[in-house]
Image 1 (cartoon, rainbow, N blue to C red):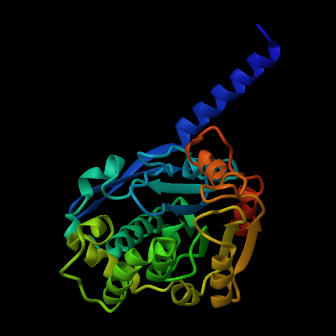
Image 2 (image 1 turned 135 degrees about the vertical axis):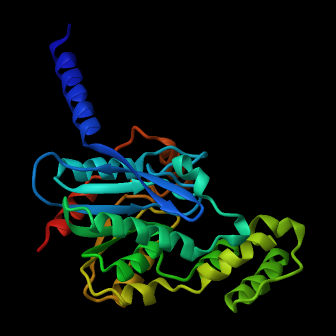
Length: 312
């Protein structure tokens, strides 16, 4: 047998065994069902810092994947933390994966529902004697959820990864702006009405995927939060991470967050996209990485986060 291949196989096997030993499946009870996640804890005695990893928008599972893409970005983050002596918890959002049974009816779902989930996980981690420091990290939409939860949970540190700096209503307007004027003429008044906290009764059927009556209460609850206002409330150390080839969130968003919290540390990674992989700015090539679980995380990402977590 090839000696190099044998050595690689042994290293892979050893790594897999250690990872399996470090994994714990944990859960919390909510009014609508159980939320479930994976806790990774380094070997050894003593207390460890622990990172609560909050996924972004949509039906995203604990590994950063959904039905349309598999990139394992959040799983890779957790494993990278483990290799550096840092514990982590990542979880399936309600309605997704092993947390599917905890989903509420769509008309009852609010942005605060996800905030409360993050707060509940934070409470559980802070009560665990193995951990001496709680770091909340949110990716994409999870950044806004995370900064609100970090404030209420009195987290020791907060990390925003590819987090937006503008209210969701502004982002939605921007995303719809390339549409024909006839479309934006219908959507702009709806967004404005929802921003004012009011629902819209008459919706053109072609807009149901965005503004159907059952989802409007959620949009109203989401639109009222401004990321720059929320991050300004944090008194703990803050790290804002952003990639230059992210086609969903821009470097200007990171700058807005840092300007709102001048004590925050900013790290811009050249060539990192929204799923934390190295990718070109070309849209089609960039999106290919969204469904490539073998592609490693961007060089420098884990070291930047570990350095921040270990900062005293």
